[in-house]
Image (tube, rainbow, N blue to C red; front, top):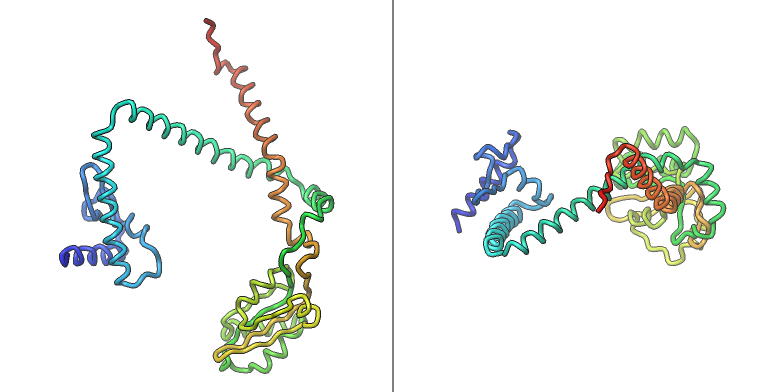
Length: 285
């Protein structure tokens, strides 16, 4: 077991070097079994990020062991399976592959052709005709958010600047944030979820709608940071979402609405073209 551990340590260390790894190079392999092999490159790609050295070693040992077991079970199954079952599996694999290729290509086709056919005018018209479908299930805001260390310089100036939407104040905040802010988010020009912003602020709001109606600014602090939020505009939960906020959703709805007809027409065109070109030949009895 100790030898396996030392081997795995070597795998992790070598896998971390910068030399390109080739699967055909036996020195780039971790395990070989019959006609299959597991490369260090594949192992490194599968390794979850942010694991400690100890956890990486445990994970690697488990992964390699399972890889070997899977291969052994597969080989035994293949040797003991009758020809009829093998043929059925081949048929299913081929059918799945054809379906997957077809699906992926159709998605690509919709993205490249159908998406380009939907104009801004059509999107706006769809939104206007279906406004009731776009009721907000959470509040949204426009504004600015800052998270600054309590010990940061000129914090009193920042508390004054963040309350102003003037270009001069915003420029000062941007320059200041480069060196001092932990988080700086400018969203005067777009709607964002109020809940997502509040996840960064250590303060609980009992009545969100009332808070937004009565507060333009929010200042909070904990033992390490100061949190500053400017709420320039808001739309509460339950109201109709603005077009600019749901524009991606409108687009997806229109695409899905036209997708079936688009793909059906595409298939019919392929069919007719194949007949005209003589690619399809009907054989009489």
